[in-house]
Length: 305
Image (tube, rainbow, N blue to C red; front, side, top):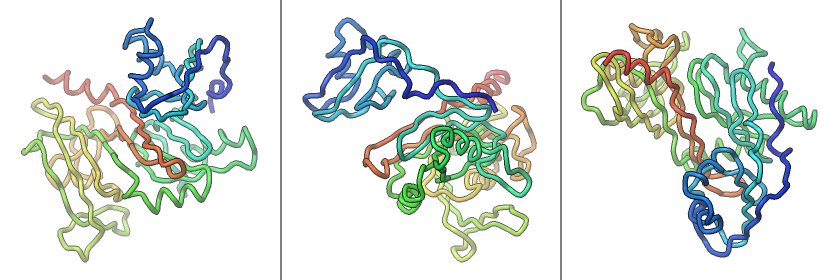
């Protein structure tokens, strides 16, 4: 396992600028007012380089809402790179949660076949370096070949709070999929009842007695003659939901032979968890995390136009 970079909390604080919020405002608006010598692009660079702290924590979203009394710090020096291991990148960490960008090919949790090389085990080792008693708890999973945003809890309490209130507190869960062919209509909703067989294959039915309700909203954002890049919003979070629903409409995800794909142009499953937005289980703050669409998804569309 690769050695991670320095944790974010080990920053130098020399010549940093400190400001106190006096009235409600978005972060970008506040920073433009406080830093008149910097333009919008300069400030975006500060955000991207993790040089903006609110009450001691890094924030990168330009539209983050500020409240009176909060302390905003502008670091003089660029922060160390985000903590990275082979297979995942830590996007955010506080006392309660860890948010990661998982790469395709990495298991979320151990199976009977593989117990060591998982996102869970990597993060468990990571937090135990600070305190051997620390533990990690999975909140939701991504399939092994699906990349993107995943969330873990640092206690059973936080795990339970997130899982029990998942539908109410999860505000946005957006995936992108590269599929075979071009769906018509290009925007719509897929609804069915999903159940898993003993062979671990998920089947779709329109009979409410034959599974759990699954709802997927889709939108084609780019396409050529052979493939389409789709944006998918989940109203439910069932196992293999997107993969089965894409098969249902006759446009399976590339590389997904299990659910009907005939082609594998990118050498992996063409599914990526792009955006996760939710209410923080302890602070109630609205959080949002983005994992950019893998470039290889877009290269297929360019190559064949």
